[in-house]
Image (cartoon, rainbow, N blue to C red; front, side, top):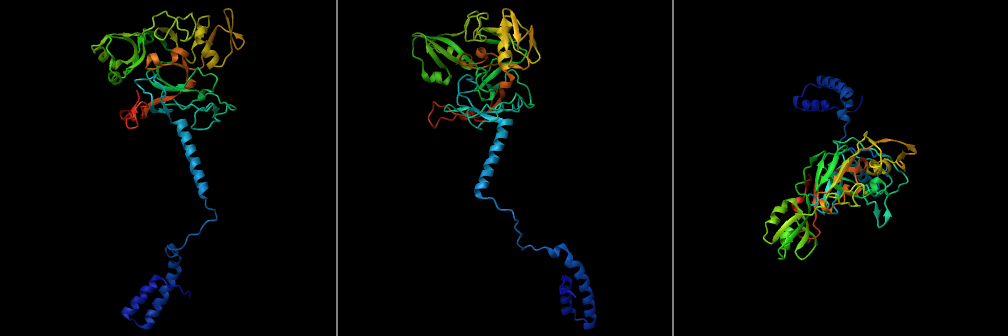
Length: 408
């Protein structure tokens, strides 16, 4: 018989010591019960459980500290690359083209899923760096991928504040060009016109941004202007034209207050007259005598829209056909050929948008380089997460009232 003793045998031992039955009766009962319990209870998982037994160490070697750090860094880089590429990115406002909606020194998050994440054109690049550092490229254009965008939550809408790549930098891959932030004024198929600085879309006046600003000629009575007053009203002096006349950039919200001061004699909007040709304004041809304050009408190309080609329309749309949609355009008198074939019309393959800064007379935007192709769109600006004023000391540098402020 096996010498293992079950718990029931222990209990019977206790009973024996207390009840004192006859030896013959107890021994027979004891032997029978212990044998049954030995066969059943000792095979139970409970009896095989050994809580204090040391676990067997597998043969897999333990990672070194260096390997653990490398794995953690690799995971962080991969995760942040996916987040930055597909969800959102952080950008800084470098210039005043969107003041007073967005200020120089604002740091903002841009949603890429709003319009759909755009896949990289140049996948061979160093992540989280500028396209160039001290004149050295941080990317290689040895591998170039075609334009592709994942589905997004919505389309670009009029009034959205959009981050995109600068169209005029045609010597660089699209995703390595300078990033800009402007407000979308018109969408594909819209007709845009600017009359005396007011934007019209499809014949209707477009709403101006609440904090939009432009330049004015301000005439004073000769008394010195209070610098603190100008700072409080967020007014910038661009130039002094004579002893009493200044060109100032004034927010709409500050205009009436400035006019109320006794030393201000007149405030007149500085607007270039209609018909005054500005060669720096799109399309840069005297046939269209347009300027930044009086422009258009111009219809924005839309995917699937077919335009009749002639000596006028080719001036307006050649850039889209040739530069953005990669065709070879040739003109022989009034005949227009695309990719070596004479054609009377052209059908666009992409959508195009019209982007302008809220600071109308201090913004390089679509008025200068024309419409923005859809493949240049990065995402929608959604929130300021930090704002720093470089003109202030260290104790007043942070604009606390702009932290985590929604953008609209």
